[in-house]
Image (cartoon, rainbow, N blue to C red; front, top):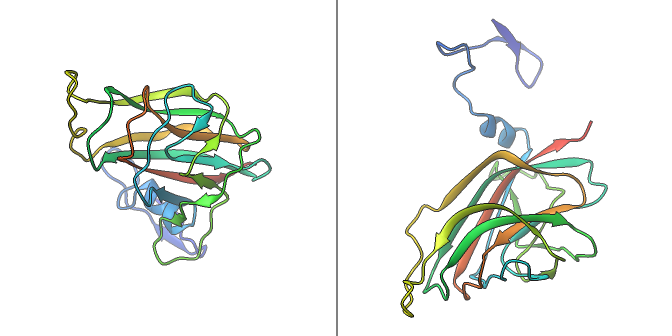
Length: 197
C-alpha cells in the first residue's frame, strides 16, 4: 500500500491489523498541517446562568464569511476555589448575531512554535450573546448541598467532543452552567478548521 507525503513523494503506508493507518493520529496531522488550534482562560472567571443573554465564561466564534468550519474536538474546565452553587457544567451554541467578539484570550496553533493563524475569535470577558441553546451537559458542579461550599471535582476534567459539534460561519459555542459558579472557573477549547468546499 502506498501514499504520498506532504511533499507529494510516494511512501509506503504502515497499517495495523485492522487495516487502519498507524503511527500518527488525526489530530497530530491536523496540528502539523496548521488546522488545529486551542484557547484557554488566562484568568479565572465567573459563569453566567443558563439562558442569560450576557454570556460569561469562555466562548469561541466562527465569524461570518470565514470560509471554514470549526470542528470542535475538546472542552476542559477546572475550579481554583470554592464553587458557589450546585449546578451543571456544559456547552451551549447559537448565532453570533451582534456579538462583538475579540481575540482574547489568545488563540494558539496546536503546532507550538508555528506561525499558523486561526479564523476564529474567543471571548472570556463577557458578551451579549442572545440566548444560547444548551448542546451538551458535561459534568456536575457540587457545592455540597447543605449550604457549604467545596471545590469542584478533581481533574482532569476533559469532555471529548470528537467533532460532534461543528460551527458553521456565524455561530458560536460557549460554556454553560445552570447557575453562576463564582469567579473560580477556568476553561479551554480545541478545534480544527476545515475549508468549506
